[in-house]
Amino acid sequence: MEIHQLRYFCAVAKHGTFTRASQAEHVAQPSLSQQILKLEAELGARLFDRLPRSARLTVFGKAFLPKAERILREVGEAKSELRDMSGDERGEVVLGIIPTIAAYLLPKLLNGFAAHHPNISVKVLEEITPVLRQGLADGTIDLAIAALPIEGVEFQTEKLFEEKFFAVLPKKHPLAPRRSISLEELNEEPFLLLKEGHCFRDGLIAACSKVRMSPNVIFESGQFATILAMVCAGMGVSAVPAMAVKPQEGCQFVPITGKHSNRKVGIVTARNHYQSHAQRLLMQQIRKAATSKRRAHSTSA
Image (tube, rainbow, N blue to C red; front, side, top):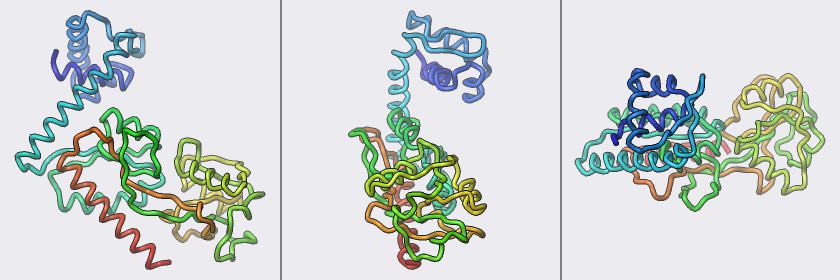
């Protein structure tokens, strides 16, 4: 049994076809297929059902997958640990981040990190929280930036900063001139909200529930940009985190009062996975970026 065979097996399981797996692994499809056949012969079990346009894990494949992933993760951690022991500042870090933070935090964070650590490659996965949790658990993501809390004893978290919720209103809305408003005052308004799966939506719904308010959701989107455009057009109201507040023609941002109208943002890692030197350096850079953001908020407040 070879490491590359396990890697190819996991790639087919992830991508669902031999073609896409071979493209992801940068290997010819016949070679990848041949290695999978050799692995199956050694194990004495068929790992995939070969369908016309897909490859589906058999019961044996489903049982073998977590073991193969664990082996690959432990080999990767062993390489990282040996590299750290040698003092070599090289490596790759996979950073997961939720969409409602990525656009506002990543540019400055990654530019600064690349300038100081040119030999460390950072790959970014922008996804909703459930996908990031799974990636952290199976080792395909090294660390994540997400809204807290994160459920699961297998994860450890570190709070970076806290930010308020802001109502987004059309310029001509009666509440637009206000210096602050409560969630209860938006109770009867047509609400434009992020789709299910986004943790900002979950946080906002939870805040509404605590003040016994249920938003009248008339439209859902996966992007703040779409929601803000519709608010500017007078289609309804919405809410965004403080980092998404920026001047936009046709919109007015008003702070929402109440102790529950905010979110905590932090770093999430898998408790039992080895943290390489490269990962620790990136975490330091994330902390610096978070400190800078906190100072900017306190200055503008």
